[in-house]
Amino acid sequence: MATRAIPDMRSSVRFPLHLPLAVRADSREHFTETSDISSGGVLFHADLGVPVGSTIEFTIAMPAMIVGSSKDVLVNCVGRVVRCSPHGDRCEVAAVIDEYKFIR
Image (cartoon, rainbow, N blue to C red):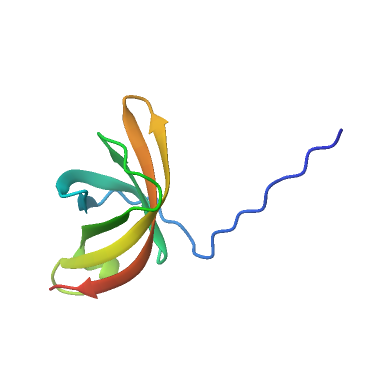
């Protein structure tokens, strides 16, 4: 029996950047860092699982050299968890970005 590869449904290029991340979910705040990021989503690790479908808010600290500015930029985002799976003693969480706003 031949196995068919599952196509990658991502529409954005992912970058393996480890950026500071503050995530607010279920009235709790987690401080972590991104594992990778794209224009459409983010992957990070959390100490506790976040239910798939949950709306989360998160703030990403973008270094000045990445965004082409003279100062670091904070980006506030609202997104939805699309995957949460065990990864060692933590959970790997993937979220799509539904809205974002540059803070500084």
